[in-house]
Length: 240
Image (cartoon, rainbow, N blue to C red; front, side, top):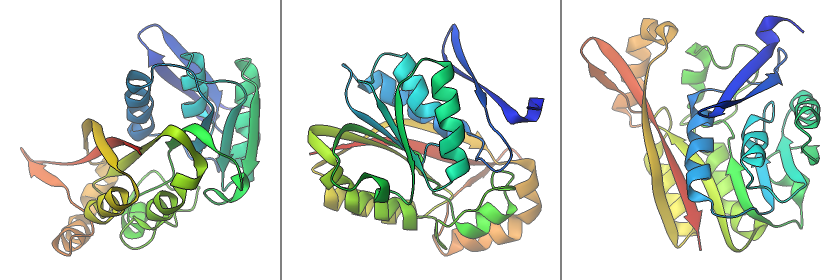
């Protein structure tokens, strides 16, 4: 395992995870960090938790270490490699886990959870192609980046227990309006938990014409100020 295949995640002031993250498994971004922080501040007691789009397992394992998971932790990802490394990473932190591969909720037919952490990719395909985030993994979020998130939202209710909570990020490099419209139609309560602004990766600044084109058609949104380009990630919780 090379240094580039290891990932360190700080989930509290004095605690961090040292996880395997081999090539071909999505490397977590600031969105995952924001998701874990927002969920951990919202949660009050342990529950049956599903880490959806688990990647290397970081979000679910971090929330488990913070004491909000009734074991086992449930984790799934479209990538079998991601599921395999999640199992290894969970074992390192004595986290009992049930991990499956498959698309969105396909692996969990008939199962319900108290909490769902959704970290499935949600950025426009043409943005993903110029970003540094998807060099070794596919992105199939659709032209406006909302397809997978919308599909998840439409199916999430039947996988939540009564009083269950769904945590999901919305990134401005996707069709935010479309995502929030569906969320509002599917859930009685959709609450913004946190908002985080990030600098656009340097690689993407070379494609300003494409980004401007996508912004003009409301596929994405970003901000230009002081010579920098920024985008944002909002974390929401949805309940009924």
